[in-house]
Length: 213
Length: 323
Ligand SMILES: Nc1ncnc2c1ncn2[C@@H]1O[C@H](COP(=O)(O)OP(=O)(O)O)[C@@H](O)[C@H]1O
Ligand SMILES: [Mg+2]
Image 1 (cartoon, each protein chain N blue to C red):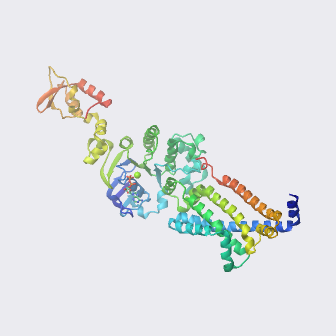
Image 2 (image 1 turned 90 degrees about the vertical axis):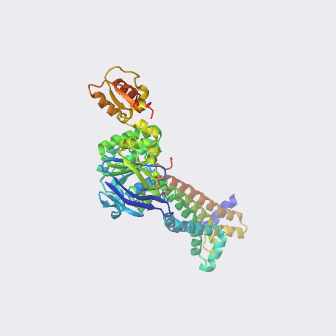
Image 3 (image 1 turned 45 degrees about the horizontal axis):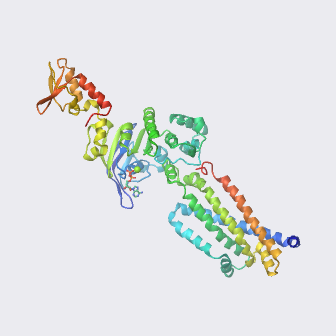
């Protein structure tokens, strides 16, 4: 234990830098992921014939082992945070696209029918009916993507993009268990913290009248 | 007035839902469309607000073709109530009712006043219910909100697709009675799809009977009970119901021959057992006739007096008169 604390204080510069890199990678990847996945999810919900191919492609991308994906990207893009971000974005896509699609298509058909019959335009139906009903499901997708991204960002070290993976990797190379732990523990804490925060947000955005049904 | 001119609808999968329908739905009346499941009632109704487009033919509202109107504007000008109600779950009752007025750009105070007025109209206490969510209401209450939502912008036409058929029998009957009362007050052009003949006879001014994408007969409830255009209509209404609903005055003496007196000493007029109660009343009203000698195949089968008609009327009220 004292060994662990000693390691933390002696390598605090390394750990702090890795920690913020890790957060940076996760956040940026997530933001880009949301920016792509949300419209894609809305698109596939609107035009069902795109649903199969788009969700299929994201699902296939997801099945590529993460280390292998980083490996594929290096010869194409080289090393650096760009490569790491691309890989992370790819992983963030599936849960968000899939949940956006599922959420948007979960609204009871009779509600949409009533909306159409009252003269709501497709955009009004999306904004006033489908999105509010889908919001909790979409948030759950973003939560999954966040936890996934925080975990996989650990591999960014292999493409020279830093992050807490750096700390773990150095610890492994020097047989320094305390250092490994000093890298792994913050990753786990980050994942748990984000999960809790987003769970809270999810509850907050669930419109009244929906969760009680 | 809503006029269908030779309207045919073939769905992409080849189903012919409507086959050359020509019919006029009158203004300010409640017209029920009835027929077996799948005969095209819903399709016919959804063409009025362009939720369904005809394959051929045209629909006119007050002689303007609906195909010439903007569909969104058209739908906002027509009330729409569906069987599964379709209240928006994350909106309060007030917000649900306010949907169309808001899209039409009404100001807030006007909407608030209108919501109060509408909730009262459908017998829901505004203070209690306006800020509740749909899931906090019973099915019957939800459909009351559904009806007031359709009335919100005071449209001339209201379409109702089996609005009460998913409700429990008690709520259904209540809402039927209230719709009838409401219609007396607001006098809208209501198109009411149902598969329940009793419901149609109870609430409609006009009834359109459909079968396999075509119209078999259009008539008032009374006319329909008196005269059925086809065997299908007769079977669809049912002999029992026809007998039960027939106006007593239009029944024949034949139907209660067991009530006739066997003997009579005094003046009488003679008449066939096939004359109606109305005709018998007219005969008895003639001062010189104290009795009618009722004849079947030229044989007197019994004598009828005022008391016979009273007994028959009482049996009729109890629904015990045979066919
Ligand atoms: N969107 C559709 N695509 C294909 N067939 C349909 C569609 N909607 C209705 N139909 C068919 O058209 C016929 C009439 O349907 P509908 O108007 O809903 O009948 P009803 O309301 O009298 O029960 C039925 O055979 C039904 O299966
Ligand atoms: Mg129907």
